[in-house]
Image 1 (cartoon, one colour):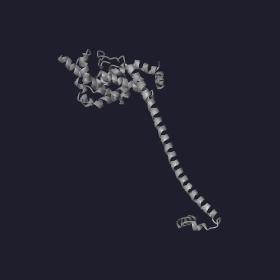
Image 2 (cartoon, rainbow over the protein chains, first blue to last red; image 1 turned 135 degrees about the horizontal axis):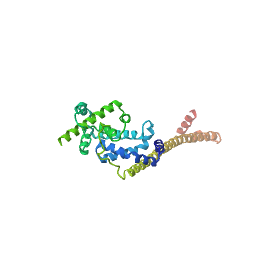
Image 3 (cartoon, rainbow over the protein chains, first blue to last red; image 1 turned 30 degrees about the horizontal axis):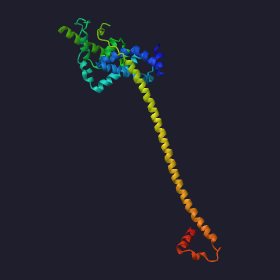
Amino acid sequence: MDEKVIIKKIKEGSREALGMLWKAHSTNVLNLAFRMLKNRDEAEDVLMDIFVSVPGKIGKFRGESALNTWLYRLTVNECLMRLRSKKRHAELEEEHIELVTVSAIGSKHEEQTDYDPELLEIGLSKLSAETRSMLWLKDAEDLGVKDLSEIYNMPEGTIKARLSRARTVVKNYLQENVNYA
Amino acid sequence: MRDQIDFSKLERIKPRKDSWETVCARLDSSKKQKFLKLVQTRSIYALAASLIVVAFVAVFTMFNQMDTEALLIKNAASDELVSWYNDLGETSDDELENLDTYQSISYLLQETK
């Protein structure tokens, strides 16, 4: 079914259309929430909260962006709200990332692409939840910088800079730990 | 892109089997709650309107009763006077003599009002 038709039907209160949206996007929403919250149960709660709120919020969706972009925005906001309320957001703020300069890694290192998943998880946890989700959406879900700019309500340049810094932090961590291993 | 992080080895979780059912149950329950709230709100309005009507009727009845009582007293007094005036001169003896002083004064006072 076409996305516009799904939106129209959800606005009319169709449970079937909402079910189709669930089938198409629930896994992506769940994984994004999981990447941000690092907790399976909480991510599942966020997923359910998002889909319960969709029929009420879809009236405000103007269709200017794709439906998945809108869902990701809802998810990011919901996760950030939860993190702020729990004061867990202090795990690593952006200023820590600022300390790491892009030149720190440089091209001297040989590109390591075969990362240990556990190391990668730890490397990702060095980022703030928001940046982590940004990196996940860009590199795992293959979203464009334009979409990310809509989701995070930031200029494209800022998104690019944050992505670049985040990659540097993660790769730096992986490189150090692979070398020590 | 060469610069990208390879997330392919990271665990990709799937929603639990009962998650969709939970979403549906929560949506149904919120629908019911909305309906109950609507009914509750309307009931409160109806109750408030009924109370206003009852209060209005009670106040109206009270004022009406007071007016009726005042009218009855007025009527009773005037009937008594009319009958006394009518009876004057009808009998051989002067009834003024039969009236006690207090009654006479009160009748005269009422008459002058």
